[in-house]
Amino acid sequence: MIYTTVESPIGELLLLGERGVLHGLYMQDGLRPTRVRPDWVRRDDAFADVRAQLGEYFAGERTSFDLRLQMDGGAFQRTVWHALTEIPYGETISYGELARRIGRPDLARAVGTANGQNPIAVIVPCHRVIGANGKLVGYGGGLDNKRRLLELEQGVLTLA
Image (cartoon, rainbow, N blue to C red; front, side):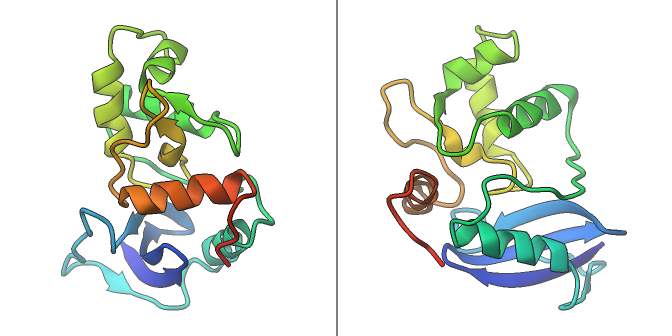
């Protein structure tokens, strides 16, 4: 695996992948920073496409990403993560609504757990899922960053 870090308006991001495929984007200033494993190789010139698209996103110039992603997890997790990619830019839904969208309305808590295990933050927009009461809840990157990302997407805040 190859990794690098990139500074962003929401703190340091760790990018991880191989052969042009992104496997992870982790917020290092969040609640659960990812430790670099000894077998990973640092290449600061890696992920130019990811860096460019993130820069456009944070500048408010990009509303979707066109990147090769690989998200390793169980079948249920992958179903939830795929459903996250279908939440339109600038919109939010509840965990219950996400559970309904995947055909499992009885599993809102499990959906929340899978959402929290999303390995590719920002690009796979787990920040667009909020509590049933409209409150911001449960974000590994911290609730301040969740709020900032949502405000960016609603045109209220410029991050770049």
